[in-house]
Length: 129
Image (cartoon, rainbow, N blue to C red; front, side, top):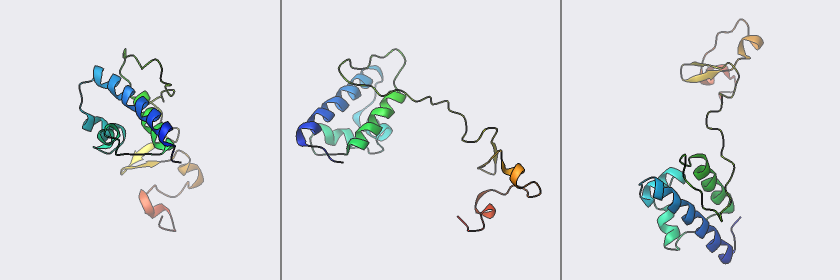
């Protein structure tokens, strides 16, 4: 969902304030920030020059990335809402999963297929997906 011009300016101000606070602690360039938090080297440059619009979802994703990677001891801008940081030390998707050939073997594989050896990738799926 795209937002009105007035709301876009408010979101731009918030993104740039958070980015500026991050840059005050970590000496990086705008291009580095764009690559790290958006995947686009010119993202923040275009926002600063008012050349770029984005969706609210993208704003939320970038703010979440900032929150997740916020430096210890750094102060988040006081007037800007901060998303709850995700625990980046989350366990693998399957409890007790093992890595085989670059693919994760689910813990339940041996239970459901006791006499079938684990083969990674499409070989286990008869549909080839």
